[in-house]
Amino acid sequence: MKFFVIGDVTVDHIYHLHSLPKAGEEVHPLRAIMEPGGAGGTISVTLARLGHSVTLAACVGDDPFATYALKHVEESGVSQAAVQRVEGQLTSTITVMQAENGERVMLSYGAANRELDPAKLKKRDVEGTDALIVSAYSLVEGPQRDYALKAIDIAKAAKKPVPVFIDLGTGAVNKAGTGLIDDVSRADYLSLNQHEILALTGTSSISAALAQLSDEGLGCILVKVGPMGCIVWTPQDTELVDAVLPEKEPVLDTTGAGDTFTATFAHAVLSGEPLAKAARMANAAGALAATQLGAQSRQITPDDLNLAAGPRA
Image 1 (cartoon, rainbow, N blue to C red):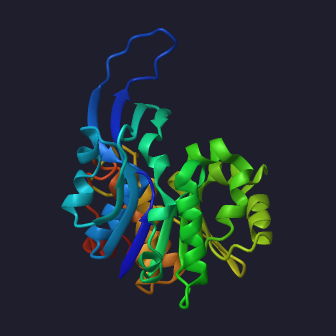
Image 2: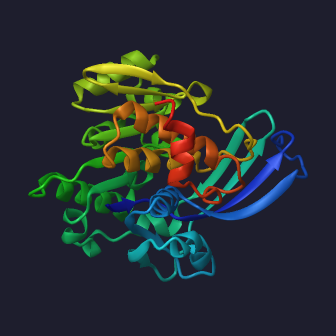
């Protein structure tokens, strides 16, 4: 299958700490790593490793980090035909500070990502794909937002409509808030976590948020609810799909787990799996992604998904 993915590529600096530092405090991390990341890159790499043909639309700068940000994209065979490079811009970086109690602070700089030029979007790239996946960070601001909206327009207007998957992120919702509702309501499949759905809708409960999004015309919503798994909502049914936790691999780093979840769900749905089984496979993939350091370090294979989700679906 063919996927067209719009989203950020970044270089992630990840620091694991006993506790988050206070103002003016100097702390020494338990470990520190630098890895390629970003929702667009992670979703693309996951899909390619699952055997799909993937084109990534992203933007990098002309600095040394550009090559590193695209390291796994290149190694996994993702097409970079729609990757743009902008002179005088920095490739995006994210600094993550992760405490032992689960608290996390992120310093994110969108940089070149926001400069993705919509004039360079080729209509045939979207029309000729089996699905369009858009990270909500692409819908926040700058030319990148225009690029993403243009791609969604093309997908919806195609002779054979292209299903649209939109994946929210906390940073995107914190910045745009309820202003994202009109954009995400055009998704065929929307994935987000329990905090994001409340911020997106301005409501105080998941049920109220789902009711509001139902009024917006959404057909399928996945709400990630941490250790409980995820809620799969459609106008006809609501189901809690249990988490699938690795039996032998401890959780080390949750960076990119949500992006892996979204990619795997899209893979399973387009492979013909029922929504509940697709969600279970996504739960398994997200958990497995957290067993290695870095957003793209743990390769998710079809065997992983069959072993973790197949027999119990």
